[in-house]
Structure formats: structure tokens, C-alpha cells
Image (tube, rainbow, N blue to C red; front, side, top):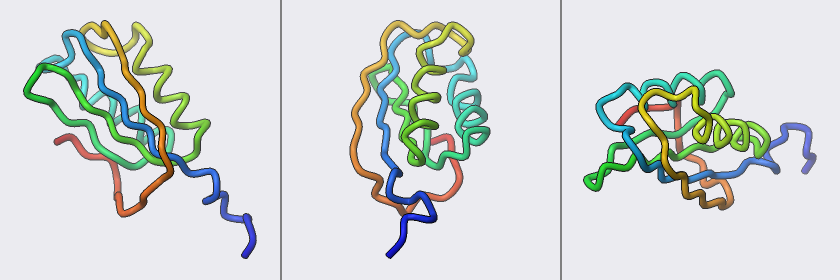
Length: 98
């Protein structure tokens, strides 16, 4: 068992993004940023107006995505991001808008 692949530092980031983030291309934008970072996961509209972003990959790339979610470069307006970190669970392919 080696750590050559870097799998040991894979994490799961779940972020709930509040603000004007539905109907403004936010999920598409998030998907593009996640794919650029080599992350897998999804961005889903929630009934309460938030977007839930689920991303797995290296901790540094997930941190970068979190920073982008909190930046002013995203479409719409982000008021608040709640983050939750856990171990990667796997089973995800690509990055999808749900």
C-alpha cells in the first residue's frame, strides 16, 4: 500500500450557498470551475433557494473551489456559504448540474 496516487488526501466538500444563486447560471459556472480543478460532484438547486455543491477531490482543490464560491466572480449574488468537510466517499463521476 503506497500513497503514490494521492488518494489518501481526497476529501468531500459539501457547501450550501445562499443568495441570488438560482436562475442565474450559478450551477453551470460552479460545474466549469470544478471541472477545471479536476473535481467530481454536483451542484443542485434546493427548494429553499440555496444551491448545494458537493465536490470530491484533493483538499487543496476543494479549498480553491470554496474560495471561488465565496468570491464576487460567480454569477448572481452569494450572501453566505456554509461548508461541511468529510472523508471522500467515492462513487462520483464527472460534475453534474442537478
